[in-house]
Amino acid sequence: MNDEDQQERMNSIAPNTGSVDTASFEYSATTPDPEVPPAIDRHPATGAMSAERLAMKALEARLLGGERKLRRREVAAGAGLSLLSARKLWRALGFPNFGDEDVAFTERDQAALSTVVDLVRAGKLTEEAAISVTRAIGQMTDRMVVWQIEALVEDMVHEQGVTDAVARKRLVNELPALVDALEEVLVYSWRRQLNAGVQRLAVRAEAGLQASEEGREGDEDDAPLPLARAVGFADLVSYTSLSRRMNEKTLARLVQRFENKCAEIISVGGGRLVKTVGDEVLYIAETPAAGAEISLALAEAFTEDEILPEARVAMVWGRILSRLGDIYGPTVNLAARLTSLADPGTVLVDSMTASALEHDERFIMIPQPPENVRGFGEIRPVRLTRGRGRGLVLD
Image (cartoon, rainbow, N blue to C red; front, side, top):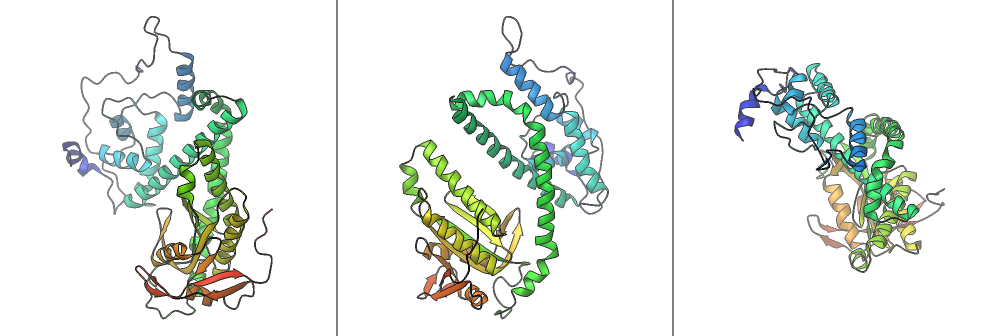
């Protein structure tokens, strides 16, 4: 811990009472006037900024709510917060570590900090919860904006016939016309997703646990975990060797096609795409039948696709822990192990999942030879195939 952390530690948010200690802040007598903006990218002779820089400054002022006029200690003090606690929240959001003399913040930064502090002060959140919720916002929005920027750049390259470098420069002039609309859709989507999340993770959680009791002894490794879910993996076959032979554009199209197809099928099936990692997708569903439908649809879709290779798919019905936007537990690990055992274009489940599906005429189970699986010992995989019914219908 450095000297600054030691000096500030006593002024952090109190974790149990929700109070905020606003003990003394130290300011340098030689601190420059924060109202004087730094000179950036000015012409050496005239002192004028380039058109590109002017456009960037205008966009930044719009996005940040004004010019950067405040230093970190000023923002923390204005929010009634110690610098140490402010830094905890900024780190949770993924901000860089600014120095004392950096004029890096606006009044909107102070207002946002105050909003989080007020939740703690009012006892609505503990400090730990506030940091965790803030980290979720930071990580998700960081991934979102990278995705959006790359999508816009790629579209400009394709539609305007410019190079990638030119498109990235032009983006600064294109974004102002999109900001308000993107923000409106973001808030709309967040509210819809929050409502759906409350239903999945709170309202229907107990019913899911009760449904998962069948066939259990109560001493399973995942027994203490709070959510019952069908956990599935889909893994593209020979992705590594394919990617080595592809150029940048072809690889980008393959990855996008894979992710788009997975997202569509999982969404139509009522599941949730947890994450994609290169050639692999992790998804969950609330019932074993929903997980089975999604898994079969994924295997079939990649088998029929003219561009993408086939996929190995596995699904396990069990209990999980949901944290940090990801899922954990033996159920997840077993699904991952089964994926590596599946033949291309097929779906494997474990014996307990097969038992949960055996009376559903939409599915046929074909027992496979026993396998020794690392961390689980001997298991009896079951191949899942389609029985009666059409399966998922994609518009």
